[in-house]
Length: 115
Image (tube, rainbow, N blue to C red; front, side):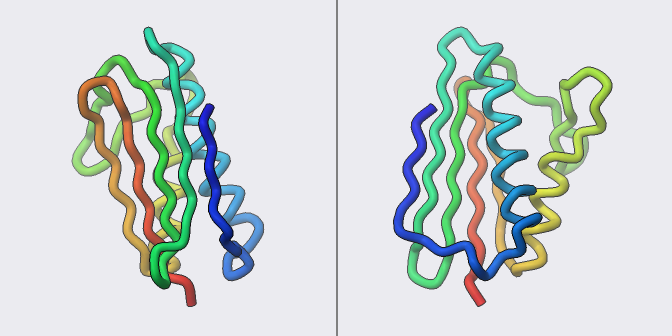
């Protein structure tokens, strides 16, 4: 894993929200990358103006299945709440979350406006 975090403060978020965002991002990335032919995961966290930018990339050999606007889980016995829980936190801060898969790379980009 390649993790780079700039000089940021997450003090505007509740501890449970920080855990929800980062634990789910990392859990999903590590699981998908672990199944990939060339595994990798990159996390970047920085301030961009008055926004907290969180950018996660990881290898993901097979294109994830979408149901409407949401990705379906591939985890056995799981309910697929990870991305939904992240999105819930992002929406609490009037933020934006984009997920995309292209050429074996899954990308999640989150922008949160600091209060």
